Length: 156
Image (tube, rainbow, N blue to C red; front, side, top):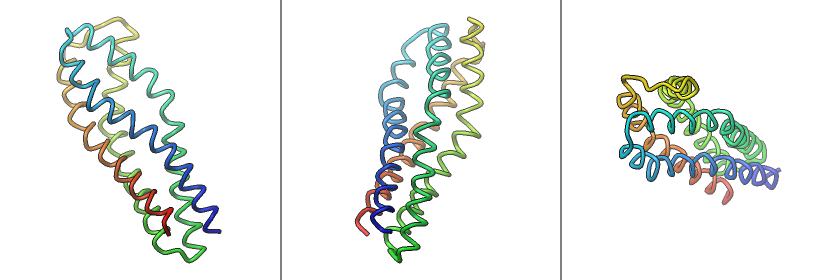
């Protein structure tokens, strides 16, 4: 049973790693790059990035969430308390990430995507981007901590 828990943790690591890498890229590369472009380019670029990201990124996110939950449950059933607790901690971190995404990032993403599809530049595009930027580092940190917790779960 613990071996299956480890396999599920590994699958969760792969899914979570995709989201973590994307969030880190956005925090380290995309955020400062978009700060250097004009408003129309910002609206078009950010909107199109979110258009594709919001369509494709749920898959690895769900893999991370479901894998973490399943690994925690199976480790608990196997009596592996460290593995269960750490996979459970990863699940909690990923759920907090999801809450931040749904409440803060997603509404901004939808606004910028709609603007890009309409070939418009919102008057508040810099405010929208600033609000999105302020949450990307905490999102990346949550994903990174979840990855650490999932790795620890494979030790138990």
